[in-house]
Image (cartoon, rainbow, N blue to C red):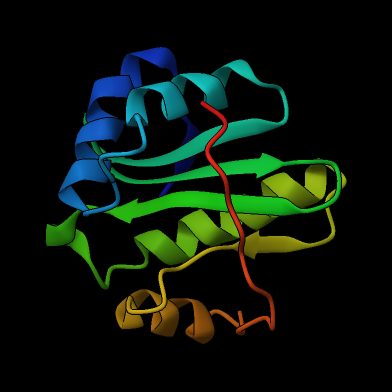
Length: 136
């Protein structure tokens, strides 16, 4: 399984994967998220392909203090094949190469499957509260 960096031509396939994996929300524009990640030198989107089909993705960024992973997605028909694990390993490598020593990610509290996945990779709950505010 080979992880590669997404390019602009992957936009439609990656967004379709995010929808299929149930990661999109009405208040987020996945197209803008994709475009911004690829246009910024401190972020990227990693993908896994099977032939021409994008079967996994992860958006990775480094804010100068912490690394973040968003949109970790696997084609729902390809779960339990190591795709997510490979993407997280590649995300960690990308962040380390960017000078990052801490990785954080957010999982909705009721997403027990995702929480179990990350715990199996050695991630643990952090005693923090995430606050937010829309700026638009």
